[in-house]
Amino acid sequence: EGYTVWRSWDEPGGIRDELYRLAKQNPQLVKLEVLGHTYEGREIIALKLTQGARGQADGTRPGVLYSSTQHAREWISTEVNRRLLNYYIDGWRTNDKEIKDLLKNNELWFVLVANPDGYQYTFDTERLWRKNLRDNDNDGQVTRADGVDPNRNYPEHFGWDEEGSSSQSSSDTYRGPSAGSEPETQAMMSLFDRADLSFQVNYHSFGQWLLYAEGWQTGTPTADDPIYYALSGNRDEPAIPDFEPGLSSDVLYVTNGETTDFAHSQEGTLAWTPELGEGLPAGGGFVFPDDEAQVQAEFERALPFALDVAKSAADPANPVS
Ligand code: 0X9
Ligand code: ZN
Image (tube, rainbow, N blue to C red):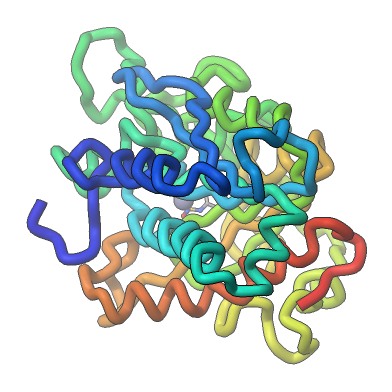
């Protein structure tokens, strides 16, 4: 739709088409699973990458979930995750030994667009839309009063306080009518049931932070140095270069009903929220520049951490990098 880098969900050759194409072209490696459907009927799609994907039952190998675009406007998260998906597939096709080994021994799960209704809406109507498209006031149209924040709807400290999520339907952090009420939430939760996830990397933007749970915690001493610098292989370097690691509420603000808190507390899945950058010139915020070189650079910066997580999935207690 006139962009160099960005592609919507619905457009021909868009993200949905690419997911189907990658699955079709790589039957030995990729299995496409429809996890659910949104309010507007779009599919919520996961790809499972593992050797012999289609003959291999889900959840039989250690898993990693790379998820993105819970928040509709955070296009850089879709694109970084899309490049990561293609990096693994290309590595497999070109017989890269390290990648092949990872894909023999692990299940790598990808949900590129966790909120496809909202994502499409940012292309068609409102670039800075954040939430899904639940029709809160049942008037049959999407207005400011609508939508639930997919990252406040999980059944972990759901609605714990009014600061970390909102009860007001017009708020950008509206938590929804009940825990797990949203199709996007249910879809992602079903993935935790079918896979055996050691780790989740839940890409968002923006800020260049590597946030960790629990989002509702404040002032709680946590072992950030040993755990969250470990994957960089260098205690002086954060795991993603220039990304400050930190307890979510310290770095940003408190949250509740949040995805990675659910992963952590209820599923035993260690989870991070990388807040990707905003690009240059600074100040773009959620609107990362439509600039191939910058997008590729942001992907390359995030890549080593993503690979380290996969390398560590079989034995998450002893991370390797
Ligand atoms: O508010 C959010 O959902 C995330 N920030 S964003 O600007 N992308 O909306 C941060 C969530 C971080 N929460 C935890 N790590 N628990
Ligand atoms: Zn976000």
